[in-house]
Structures are given as C-alpha cells and as structure tokens.
Amino acid sequence: MDSIRKSLRICFVAFRKMIRTPRFYVAFLWFACLIGLFAMPVRNFCIATGIDVAPWMFPLLTEEDVYQLFIIIGAMILFCDAPFLHADSSWQILRAGRKNWFWGNILYIWLLSLLYAVGLSLIPIFLMLPHVKGMPGWGKILGSLAQTNAAAQIGVNGLNYDIMAQYDPLQAMVLTILPVWLNTLLIGMVNYVFNFWTIRGAGAGVSAAIGLSPLLIKRLAKNRIGYYISPPLWMNLSYYKKGNYGIGPSFVYAYGVLLILILACTLISYIGVCRKDLNMMEDI
Image (cartoon, rainbow, N blue to C red):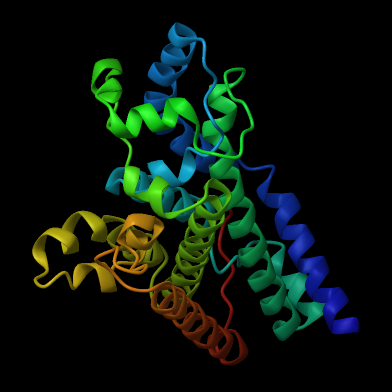
C-alpha cells in the first residue's frame, strides 16, 4: 500500500509540473489550429443554413493523414522530456525508491495520454460553439458535408460517409479516442525508451518517424501492408475490417499490436531504471 501511495504521489507531482509548462498547452493548440481551418467554414455554413452541427466531428476528421500527424506531434511535445530525470528527480528517487518512481512515471504517461485523447476530441466542439447541438444521430450538417458537394462549396474536404454508415456517433467517438489514447501512450513510451537508452532527443526522432508513417508507408508499401504496420492509421475507422467493409486490420489486431509495443517499451524502460545510472537533465 505504501508503494502505491508513493507512485501516486510521483504521478501527481508530474501532473502538477506539466500543467505549469507551455508545452502542455502548445500540444493542444497545435491541433486546435488545424481544426480551426475546418471549424470556421462549417460555422459559417451553420449560420447560413440556421442548423446546428452535431458534436461528433472528431472521428470524421482523424481519417486524414495530416490530422494523424498533428496528433502524434502533439504527443511528442508532451513527452519529449521522458524519462523525466529532472533536477528534483534525485530526491524523489531517494524518498520513493527507483521502482516506485518508475511506476509513478508510467501512471503519469497513461493518465496524461488519456487526458490528451479526450481533450483533442472536445476541441472541435469548443471551436464550433455556440453552433453545436447534442443529437443522437450524425445530423444534417455532417450528413450534407459527407453526401453532397456542400464541403467543396464551403472550402473543406468532404467527410467520409462510410464511417457514418457503419458506426453510431457515440460508438465512433469511443473507437476513435481509444486508438488516439494508445498511440499517445506509445509515443510516450518510445520517448522514454530511446531517450533513456540512447541520446536525448532520439525519442523525438522516432516519434516523428511514426507520425510520418501514414504519409509514407501507405503510399509505398505493396498489398496494403501499410495499413498493418502504421499505428497512426488506426485512428481512421474506415480502414478497419468490419463485416464486408474495410481494407485494413481488425480492432483486435490494432489494439493488440499497440498494447504489445507499449508493454515491450515499459519492460525495457523498467530494466534500464533498475540497472543503469540515472543522469539528471535540465528541464525543458
């Protein structure tokens, strides 16, 4: 019980420190600026038609490569200082022990990743206020942007109607937030492993490569293999195999691979924290 309390304390201190840094807000603003390019024309469309938009925009946006890239880069911004060996970490390790300090950091990565994923899903809603209305279906505005030429007329990319046809709105939101959460977790653990075992900044380079993988692998790989080896692509619900629809992996495959990679990075990090010398770094 004392170990749990110490790990929770480490997590709480890390959270308190993070929300005081500009990086925390930049990670969200980075994505919000991109969403704004979609939100402003849609807001004007709502005003012109007198119809409010449904709050289920997030699953329809993450199907695009550029949104996936921005999500990954935002996650990299959050976790670029992993493994969190700051000036005050030495006394934390002395008081809590290496293992408790490590598990506190892992809990922090999990919770911050969840906060990030949920926060991103709310940004389109905030940017559309007050022209958002809760409704059980996808609504007339999103339906028009997916099935008519309305999107081209207002200057935005058309939405994917296949997602609307296959998923209920709330189901689509959950099934999009989950891979965003797991991808963010993976980025956090990749930064932890590579920054710890190699040189500082290596994690950011690997994270950038993961973020760019949808733009590269999907176009270069044959036989659609890119859909199976690029985790950011799994933020796009239209790729999953569901019945006779989809050209990519199943949900079990995608979530299983992400969890295996996260657990493998966690194990490698744990071994390093237990066995290696811990060199403190300056805060970012």
